[in-house]
Image (cartoon, rainbow, N blue to C red; front, top):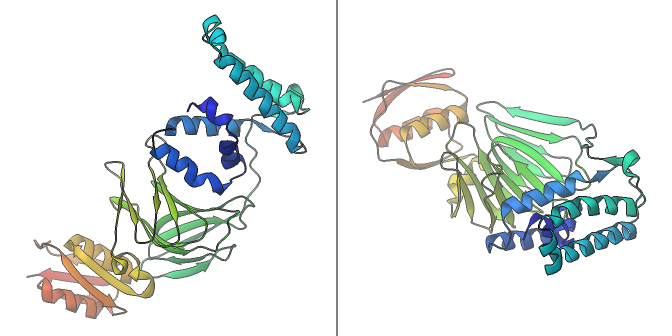
Length: 337
């Protein structure tokens, strides 16, 4: 389908203009089957959003009549005789018919048509969690968010009637309040997740090579934030979406529940972790700085620690990776043997 076909499709217009999530899976499946190109879908979405009018009192029956008239022009343009006369007829017709659409609903183009984006003033709240701390927040819609150390979340003081959207850097576990009329969207630099009501973990630390979204319950749509790639997938419980930042690839896999989500319950879990990963996570978890004399050559460390002190955790790891350590307030020195 072309962008023009999509603009004239009532299901597509409801999905874009009214944020009707009924058609979310429908369009994702059509893209997956190759029936709709992501680039055409994005172009159609931009076209619809650009046709914004200042007059908010237009009746629905008038607007529907305008769309039907536009569709009739399109059908005429597809007739063989029309294509033979002028192969550029449809692009010109689209512009003319768009004006007809606006006029037919009683809006004068010269006075009331607005192509500008109306952005009402919104007050945002931003929470930044330092190393060594974890915080539980309740959002305006009663969604509960567990924020990990060294994480940042930004959200409006009050969500709109159409959408609940937050921005995340770092890691958070979301218990989303169900609201079928208002999708809940979590955005990071490289990945975004869209849900109605579910529980999932979103990990997007800026210094890491991957962005990971692990679904515990419900259903989740995950897509990358890069318009050029257009990757998207639907997750079911026990699925995890992994976005490789360097390769720009999005893949689905299973996940270890303890490794991905145990942190919110005080469980520090390592699975085949490199020594650098161990050090970095301990610094974030306990809010300390760690100096190491050298990096040992290890295959990977696996272990679980439930609400234990830094001293106990280092002691446990040192049995698998021989080293001595000293803790002086927020400074830790490790000497690998």
